Image 1 (cartoon, rainbow, N blue to C red):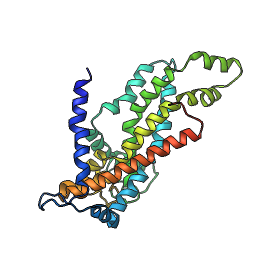
Image 2: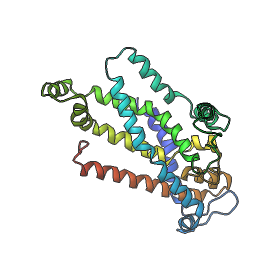
Image 3: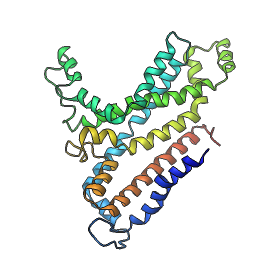
Image 4: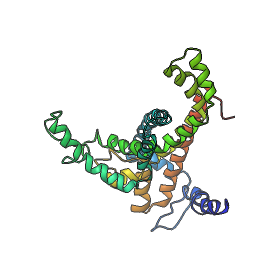
Length: 282
């Protein structure tokens, strides 16, 4: 039963990783003879202003993690109640997850255009006098893409948290209410602590997704991270130098740096949860 999945992982994940690691130390490209260059690719990356811009934008993109986790927990708590039409709300919140990222990014691009629906409402309601250039403004472009990521991922993490909520014994919450604890005290002192293993998992997945964000930026702003590299992340930068400049060795080196960055964030997550006494995953 596991064989098909394992074979796919070997072909498209593990083998490319093992094959790609040595490339980071070569000048492998579509035009030059492959030579061993040692750490020159990494030195080149650290001397390249575009690399630092992409790294800064990728780290900034991690802002979506606490936002998406908090909203997902609140949504999961909401749909975990026995409300009228609760199944309708669960399906509605999950629809963005199964929507194609390309279709979602195109739709949101239309929303953020100067003649899009968002500017229509802002000008109609008198909030702004003129349309706002959400797509062309260097200070707003990246945050617009973040909105797409948050909208797309809320339902996915909500379902994970919903599974976690339904695994919590109801006797604990009932005992707390009998002792006089209000709804928010029950959530804060019982529900959230028992959800911490799920918070750890979802936060880790969200951090990895945030640092590797690609599809929504590529569709909304192209392969150069326009405007003026405001949306240039490490994934877009790696794509550009690998498949537009055909410098696969340098691209592998940047990809390795991104992998190390993800590892650092993962270790920080583990350290934070252990320090906070939330050592549920041992």
